[in-house]
Length: 117
Image 1 (tube, rainbow, N blue to C red):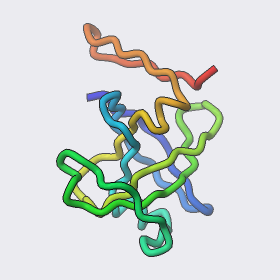
Image 2: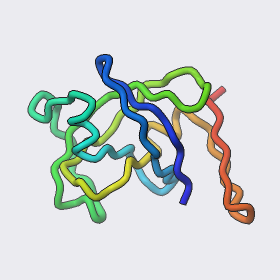
Image 3: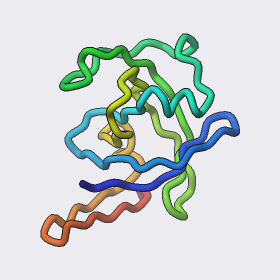
């Protein structure tokens, strides 16, 4: 699985995570506990649309975080912060793939990430 190490930051709190780079995911997803560790307050975030798939039974809220990937300039990533606990950080089309170009090399089981030009 293509996992990408990164640092997420909100209001001076930061945490190192590994995000699943998922070109089939519509949105970025953040597990509940990670949002709490960054100091986010569930009740202060706006409710989002209903997630689908195995996250359909969980409520989600919008959360904007700063993300540092490798030595690239930090970017703002929008997450669907879910009450689900047993999911990884997911990096999807909105908006990880809007901020980064990603090339998958399946035969080598590798991938490459570059900031958008």
